[in-house]
Length: 212
Image (cartoon, rainbow, N blue to C red):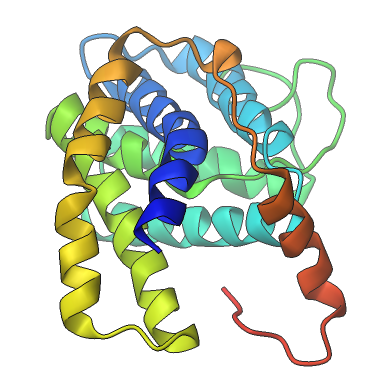
């Protein structure tokens, strides 16, 4: 199990870390530009969607991302968070028109854009000014914790083994966070075909394992 997670994180975590970091940068109070935010925010989430070929994992990420962003905006009604929520509402509601203040598409068309958990997490962290490294590290650790929890429910894995795995993998997570400082999102490789195929087959299983 430790070997699986080591290689899984090497392939999948860099993309998530880069998405989280980029979203944090978009929300930085000193750099935030409402006029350009829309196009950059949409492109970031579209890029992540394109890199998640399995529909179920892609939609799970989008569902959790929307929930997290709405929860954060309800607790801390910051203008930048409210702006992101309005973008999500208009894009997924299909009632958006062009213009910087209407947060719509430039061509007035309609399309659905996923809002991923890593970008929502990074955006909220950026709005709160929690620090790029801390937010990216916290996201990867939380993501790993969720995966290990799923293993506990599916496999004969005890709490002590889960805690040991989490501790053993911390140096790898720290390396991934450090590398994300100088990594461009478009140049990151994320190759786990067997896991993607398993995710695609999940929809046709007679007994579904998890739902987000």
